[in-house]
Length: 212
Image (tube, rainbow, N blue to C red; front, side, top):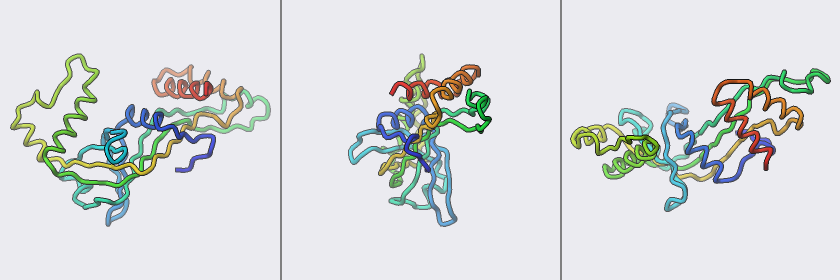
């Protein structure tokens, strides 16, 4: 990922927060047929024994695991909020017209070694942990134990666990840092005029950058 210095984000806690807030990752692997990409919810285990890891599961029919890519490098891409930035928002447009559109966004790339888990206990624990995490804010959270045991056992036999042992993290927060204060204020005003959650989130991230 190309990261100009002014867009680089290195703080582990910030990178981890995005990965947890947007857990549906694009997992890129290299197969004998070429690159493959799968969209998989990945659960971050920060500070796990042996280092930070990402854990998830795929359908047994998915060749991601049957390609036998254990111990090969893989890349998990996490995409945060993003928003189009109109050049009409820049006050400098009135000065010389030398402005162009762009896109503000944040993303994390997690590189690591891919491992495959077929152990029934590991798969069940991963599913229970992922479900518990996602159901934690529900007024009536669903749990794996709510379904009949025989049904769950059958469903678990149809999935395979995956684990990415993270070797490096890259973070890019492109939030108009390369613009003047006047133009950044214009972008914030433009984003405020939109009625969508992603624009509001990008504005909040821009303000967080201003406060650093």
